[in-house]
Length: 391
Image 1 (spheres, rainbow, N blue to C red):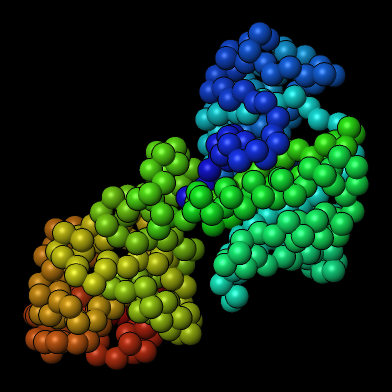
Image 2 (tube, one colour):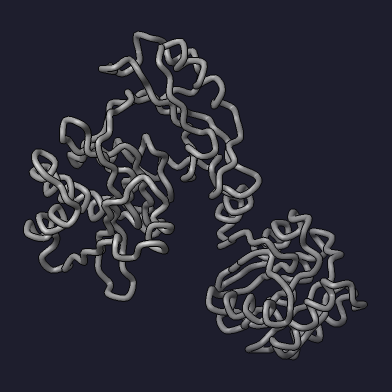
């Protein structure tokens, strides 16, 4: 789960990571002069709060020299749909803006913490070339990316923080401040079950102080049960509405860009199914896992999600009857197909207990359900149907 910038900064501030005082407003009139955070040089930054980077290049971050200018910039952003290089063409709605005093920056650094799946350790990623897309820095100058692995037994060591401070070229107060900042970042990462904490840029101000100018925090969704306070802040308006609806039905759904919908029980089976569709020349429209113990209600909900996508031209249902018998699954598919008025060509591959009985029930249903025994054949068939072949 992603946090907004203002939520991420509030979290980091609790762990003594330095951030600017900010004001979050949902209407420009709330940015009254008396409410604005103090600014030494009379300038403020107005930032659109959406779950995306690259806001500055998309016009989502503005500078203002007066309180009236702050209100005007806030009014321009609020209610707007902001399209960035990371949002896709639909963009994301701006419901809040964050107003902070402008900062005189001497240097911009990059600092992030995430999990290295190969080493199974928390890794710190840093660069003296902050303020840019880290992917671009990595591509053009790989040596500019610094990596520091943290041993889970002993945690972050003070000498590691000092080594990284030297490598980043920090001096004066910024050098002394860095170990405590990195310790705060690590404590926040562990305590809040983060997947990613990214500060870009981490500014060195002209007074040689470190300041998190922008921050991104992603919380591990598997930790929702023990991070309730954070998950209560979830902003569903920033998420794909189909994926939100799927979660409420107990389905795992991810929207993709193709034209062939998939309904599968099991994440691994879903990945294999999508691979075979692509191998046959098609493109999956979604990842949809109905789970091991699926039911008629779940299948119906899954069909409704699939049919809500106007790009879908054919459906591949690939179910392994291990926990539930295939004849019961076939009953659920037929009932759900009748309930939603399924007319899109649908290939069903059943394998497992009572698979033959299940396929016979599908064939005799009178619906546009095409039973296949083999997964590769099913993938080829559904791709052909999506291209207009007769069923």
